[in-house]
Image 1: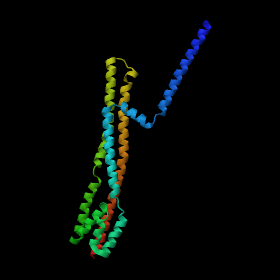
Image 2 (image 1 turned 135 degrees about the vertical axis):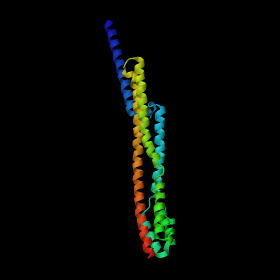
Image 3 (image 1 turned 180 degrees about the vertical axis):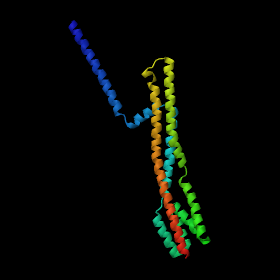
Image 4 (image 1 turned 90 degrees about the horizontal axis):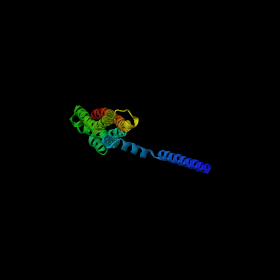
Length: 242
């Protein structure tokens, strides 16, 4: 009888152990099956709404500025070689007014600069050149509009993350001082929150920095195109005046 009871108890312990192991395995599988978005969402919530919300706001506003600039710069991009040839042909066949009409029908800062130069050609080449230079500066300001906000978000996002880290570490040390005992489980939550704010701040800055570099490269390309086109326009006007 005792032997049977011992056997039943052993069997019960084996079943309980097997059930516990199975539950642990199922939990691990559930954790592994979580998607990246779900994990990111959980980590974001654990980071706390105060600093995480501000970091998220920086990311949203920065992406809005970046997308607006990218769309504007792509629309501002012009095939300057084709435009130069069209203006040159129009000058040769129909004069200044025909060339101005070509510029009116073409979008972009290069066409606008061409139009300003053509509009002042009757006052002399020097006046046309001054108009081209002045209007080129105006167009450059339009290209760089709101880019400073993007650089601000890039700078402030990791700073907010570091601030959250410092505050979390202060809270952890305050708990240690209050309890008088250094326990990993006591401060683990505060340290995790502190590190999560830094991680998300850095992720935000990295994403926005990629867009920022693309926008700056695009602006530089358009500005170089504007400068080359301005020189070509002055040469065309000088040849047309002869």
